[in-house]
Length: 190
Ligand code: 5GP
Image (cartoon, rainbow, N blue to C red; front, side, top):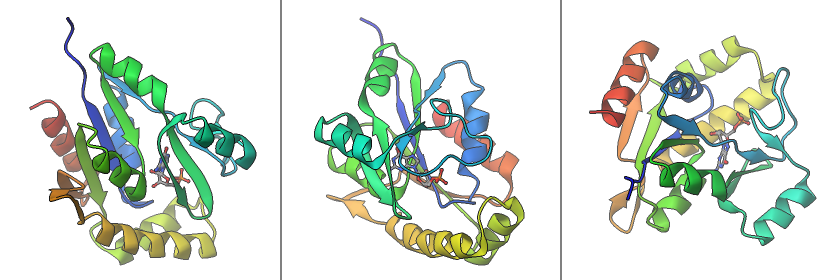
């Protein structure tokens, strides 16, 4: 019998640095990662099947009905979901499986008692988050304000508990990216 791998859930507002943290973790040979499905349009440079599975709303809804998603949620008007099978396969092979999802989806996993390490990457402040989103330049001014509003809600929701268990095991404030990556590595591989 082989050891089952561990699920690692990483969340955090857009611009908090979670994608950079995940990019660093993906370099580890033990790590496999989830490619989510989404109904949002691809951004410049994003590839179908690599960054996301880009689906029509009809296709996404059919897959919900077929119970193909481990969890799914609406974010900024679009649907996002984690396909079920890659995780099952990766964990059965003893791999570390990384999913990068928002808070409502994470809550669903906690409610169902899915075992794993649940991490939330927080920005030092909302002003700093706005500044980072502006610097990144992948959203227009209205989208940035929408993401800042969602971030404020997410920061509050991330501190919630489900049946006495906090949704997140650790909330890390990302002041310095290298230090945050080191801290996450130490949590994953103590
Ligand atoms: P973005 O549009 O910036 O790529 O992602 C928007 C938000 O959706 C991010 O917080 C991201 O972590 C989250 N997200 C991406 N994939 C999934 C998923 O499969 N499920 C859930 N619940 N959230 C996701």
